Image (tube, rainbow, N blue to C red):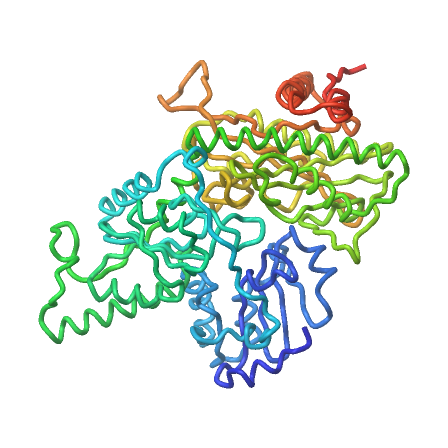
Length: 610
């Protein structure tokens, strides 16, 4: 982190600053923005990572706690520290067009220029030979029995959307959208079954831009049947120029498509119009025969239709998610049974030991592929680090007298899981039980929520916080994120969050997490997480003639009742907990035997107020 000045030698004309996007920060955190100037380095991240960043940043960096009072946004900070006339460099392949335009607009008010570094990423220049080789594992076909809809049908639906929007082609750049649309899966990104690729779908053609060394004969046959051609990954910009030269009306989701692609298309459109003006008319007729489309290339700037289609799970995808969650619960029961036995034997186990052992149990389940994210295994104070990842050389030994938080998930061939449980192996304090119970009350309130169709997720966020708010507590993360079906553990467009900018309504078939929490810095962390599927609810009335929606549980695993202060639970909340544990036993016990089955029996017994 001390090596700041060498940037000048790599690009002298970029006088003052380099701005980096989150994917370059994997050594530090998984979400953030870094800015490096000649004499300063600052990192912006949100409340999930404050404690982790404090531990991992050295003195060369200034931590900017995004969202806290008085903390400027990254663009605002730039206008404060840079003199007029400065130049801000970014890699346009790592910023969405919208993000780049927002940055450009803010800094231009201080007479600062945004520079796109198309051919030179300065981090790569420093990384040099030590940079890991690009991933090269083979792509695989996602079986139709799990996908539910074949590729030809998905492409046909997408093309109907293109026609309706007055578009002749679309660029798909979100990796999970490419994987979902083509019923393919990869392993280029840790824990996410996707491959680095772009996809262009035209009215009568489709082209996948990918490293062909990862394409097996089975995948090639699969794509050929669907009419999808292969192109080199790094030829995407030349294809964009070709489409513009032929007059294509290109659908671009500027919130996700990178700035390099959008700027290339816009420049090519300008060139086309200039050339057409000088020639009087074009010789190419490909995109000019339809009365519904304007002559000449033009962008259609709208949200990708694939995003919503992917979020609305079909029956096969839901069945796979349900089945994979039950197998996952069986692995978790075996793990927790083992762990309690080891703790009672006073075995010294580290947070990493537990993450490794859980992986061992999961890997024995049918269809297991990988974890769905780095396991968060936090004892005591480490549980307060919201996205804590233990490392062998620095992690803690699990303390049986402190709260232990375990947030983990798996990728199976038929589904994706994500579950958090917080437990105490000894005797919890009254404070810990009070906080845990308030988190549980919020979890129950959201699980039982019923709401009218067209309700965005942010409306439901307060359900999960209400019990905490009543005693003056809260948490610094969203309450729920979308989850893919045998895809990314975090997906959009839906969410349940205090961030009210996302107005996407929750719809039948969407999957979201329910994960309220509470974190006492440097003391303990609590989180209870299940996955839920949005479903229609048969209410006795239908005011306004609309549907009312609620949730169906996907996660079935015990919640530790030792941590519950029964005096804080209502009769209805106790009934919810007992009913949930009854379902856990009914669904998961057939998959277990021996001590793990006994453990599940003991941990799903009904509770009653004394």
